[in-house]
Length: 164
Image (tube, rainbow, N blue to C red; front, side, top):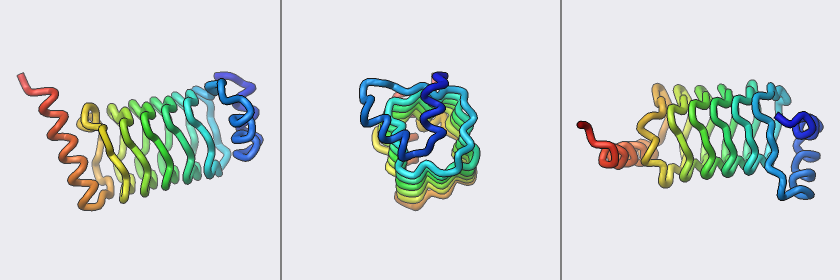
């Protein structure tokens, strides 16, 4: 974890996003931090190392996590409505009971991601077939269309990983 990056984030989403614009070549590292600021609407977390971060119950509506590392992140009960998680790493992340309405999960690594009780209506699961089968779905709320996408992705992953 980079303490300087964490201090910038703790100043609020406006300061954070401005710093990101001024420093596009820096991939922030906030790994392992406990981030208990309640609101990050529209935060720019692209390419940020957020592995092992504990967000508490955070409001992350429309946040951009494209290509971010969220492995083992704790996002239980977080609101990530309309967030972009394209190509993010969610390996072993806890998104149980999270609000993920209209979230983009295209090409996202969902290896053992916990979606138990999460609300995923309108979620986009484009090209997630290789690891979607390991995600934990118990009680997740999906529309009929999302259920079809998840089932299709599961079938595709089974084709790639046949039983021996």
